[in-house]
Amino acid sequence: MPTFSVRPSPQLRGQVTIPGDKSISHRAVIFNALAEGTARIENFLPGADCLSTIACMRALGVEVTRDEQFVTVQGVGLRGLGEPGDVLDCGNSGTTLRLLSGLLAGMPLFAVLSGDASLRSRPQRRIVAPLRALGAQIDGRADADRAPLAVRGATLHGGSYELPIASAQVKSALLLAALSGDDSLRLTGKIASRDHTERMLQAMGIDLQVRPDQIVLHPPTHPVFPYPLSLRVPGDPSSAAFWWVAAAIHPDAEITTLGVGLNPTRTGALDVLQAMGAAITIANRRNEGSEPVGDVTVRSSQLRGTIIGGEIIPRLIDEIPILALAATCAQGDTLIRDAQELRAKETDRIATVAAGLDALGAVVEPTNDGMGITGRSGPALRGAALHSHGDHRLAMTWAVAGLVAAGETTIDDPECAVVSYPGFWEELAVITR
Ligand code: S3P
View (cartoon, rainbow, N blue to C red):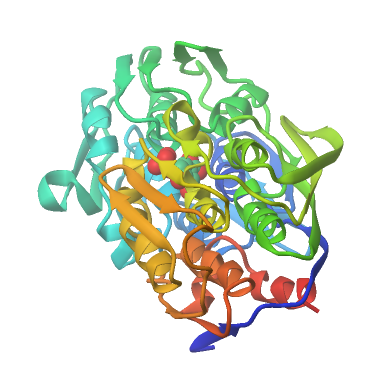
């Protein structure tokens, strides 16, 4: 599929079962490797990123098997990981590289972690500096700011660290390192980011205290997690968001996304869409494992411009490309600010999103930490030849744009959607039928 072509569809209708959450799928495999016993993970996301995590865990000697329904992990405990015989290939996945760097920093082994060109261009000092402060021996290109990263396992200590950026990957890398430390670790500062690591470690019996201003982890005295965690992974709200926005901006649409994770650290996009006037209903709220879940229905809506900034940013960081598209179809202007982290994602998403929206005829002004978007008083979107730049969330954002932009929209490298949403293009065909 060299390019994918999308045209406006007269209507969008359907129910979409949302594939498993990417963040939780990674963690379910990594954490269960550290427990004693067998864990069965249902609705694991078979996206390329999570398959990179499985491949890395296997290279560390963990038995991970997959069948139609389950991924099964045979725990080896904190001292059971083996030295990998080759570079750990994390593919496109920042979560794999950063969480495993933290985990391996305190293990008696040597490992090199690398990935594709996008991952090798992303900043890593954010994990290397605090891990070194705990005693880790890590080096890498560009003064240890770029992968490949070389980790030589060392004796780690506890201590305190004030997180300067709200990043769940950095927070999780430190918590994983602290598991093999000789003293407790206290994290303060910007700890408010997705909290799947905290929830799952607690459910597995790790002594982890979470308060609004600090997280404290006491390393386990016994080198295995007390309990394996079998779970059903909730649908990924970051994947559901494409359908939410498609339905909200399309003139004749109603889409229900089934089984979506509603963890409050992940639902910023729902809050913003609601504030923009989207017609949203949430039904069948329930808990699955340690996470809240529900079915979210969105109908055609007249959206209003808004301001997206401040504390909500970590709760919707991955949804900003699709929210920016929503803003081009709203009445009135939208300002996205405090989102400089977008520049450190799979692509510089301030530059790539602004360029794509501009090609669609929207009026967008990129800034250092976000962008300003002129709403529908500006020109309506027109189809264009758009670039995904190998970034899964861009490819899917441009597909949704094609559903409302006049004429034909083409997207190059559409296969990259498989990083987080295998089956996206097939689902698009069903919704537009
Ligand atoms: C993730 C955390 C976020 C997010 C990424 C997944 C995670 O990154 O953008 O897609 O699973 O911890 P940061 O921690 O860098 O904000």
